[in-house]
Length: 342
Image 1 (tube, rainbow, N blue to C red):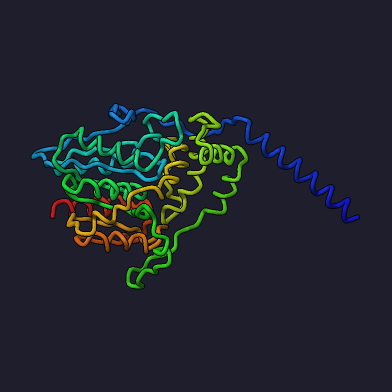
Image 2 (cartoon, rainbow, N blue to C red):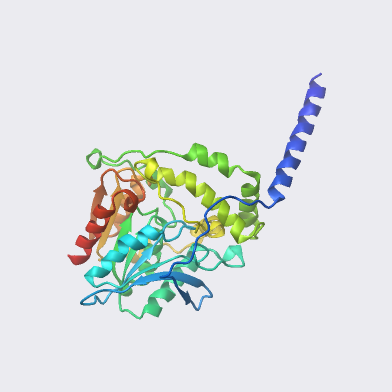
């Protein structure tokens, strides 16, 4: 009897595996937004081969010498319209403000080879953008992964970095896993955000999405078109972004700019990076760190920015999550303005 049950179970598992594989190979079409080009959208064709979409808001009045460049989160994230609306107001202080979609996401181009999506590729693109602007120094605003990217470029371009603004920055790469254990001081009154992982995992177990991920991460190839793959990340983002705000009902609406292959492969490259901490140990670059009270980034990873950059200012934003600009746009903008002007 046991042999019979084992045999039946074995065949059932085999059938389920075949069904899973077949489903994973069938292209699908998801009902998600498709990002549309804005009236303000312009393009850079960089020497690296990247076609980069950006919006530039020209500084008003007496122009500042250091332009501001915004680095969005992800990898695989993009510039939201709300980012442009809020940070564009910094132009009133005389700053030229640039917001661009990193390669493989938003309105920017997609790469043919998945393995070319690396942290070093994003760093190289940013270095070429800085050179293209022709300014002696730049100010970088890095959101989440954008903060880690700002650290990578600052480490190799100390002479070109005026100020750094980190908003809920992600862990500095390569990641020091020990920082996960660091607890925040009670005085900061940091709180745990809503955790949407259960719902996100349920979607992430979709056979097609798993197959796309495996082919990209392990074989460096595209099982699905960029459009289809991006639609999966966009769909997933509608779930996990609810954990990036204090009030999940206020999660920002997706605009359809998610970059799936950039998201899947960039993280694979983190371990191969040259440690930026070495060059930054003696840095006196002024930095501002804004952290939402309900930010989902562990305190230890935030604290490392304060330890690495001695000339720092930390501001905890109440009733805000990982995306401070969504729920507390006025406080977010005002803190940045104060830092820039002092």
